[in-house]
Length: 116
Image 1: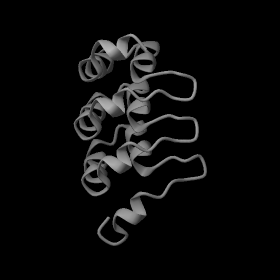
Image 2: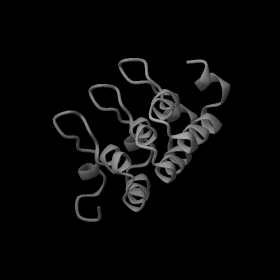
Image 3: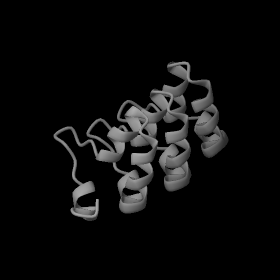
Image 4: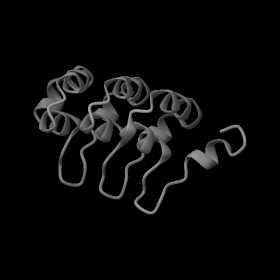
């Protein structure tokens, strides 16, 4: 990140995936921490063409520690983002049986998230 800086980490692939979204999808916590420090909320709030955020893919894959980092960096605004099909972080965590991930997103999103 020191060489390319924020400009480099803000780049996306052909589907619109940022490096933060890819790190969240795989549960790479340390990489996600660095990306949050360099890219800040602007990077964390980016979504892919299908509307999926880094928090949504972390929830879908049950990556609890990644979700905690993302909740801290993006707050309720990030957790409340739904994809183009209307699925929220709570939907995908529940759908995939990730109970602890569901707890984390419900704590961050509150009743409003559950009612989506």
